[in-house]
Image (tube, rainbow, N blue to C red; front, side, top):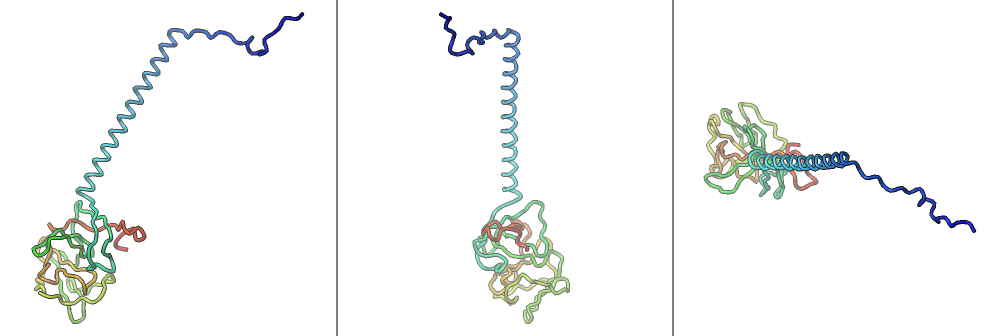
Length: 212
């Protein structure tokens, strides 16, 4: 009677595993240790880069960029109450047309948002009969305003030239803005300007530059 063979033919082909040479084991251990060191170094470098980036962001948000929320209607139709803006302050020098956030004044404690109309050394005049605003003898083209530039209560006696370190500001809603036209606000010290409005981030439908 023929001898029974294994039902699994592969069993005959199996051979015992050869032991791994000692040198090879040492090499594998060294490679694993090196890999572990590399992973640790990578994690450390990544964590370090993350911390540096976080510090940079915090510094930028503290000293260069800030978020503010518009309150009131003095800048309509350019800005609406509730709009959220990003303002920049790093190395900022006020220029005509800039929308700026002013920290405070003698007669108000809350920040206000207005547009720079004239800066130090410039000659400003307002014709309240026609509503024309002139800087250095040139009538400004102001497509951004709403209404007519009217005389406010307690009108400011505008100096021949804006003094050094000051700016003259007005809201775009000329009939609904308390600004430098009145002694209640007056000329704005540049040192009281927090920064220049750059981007509207809310509402999302109007995300983008505030100067479009």
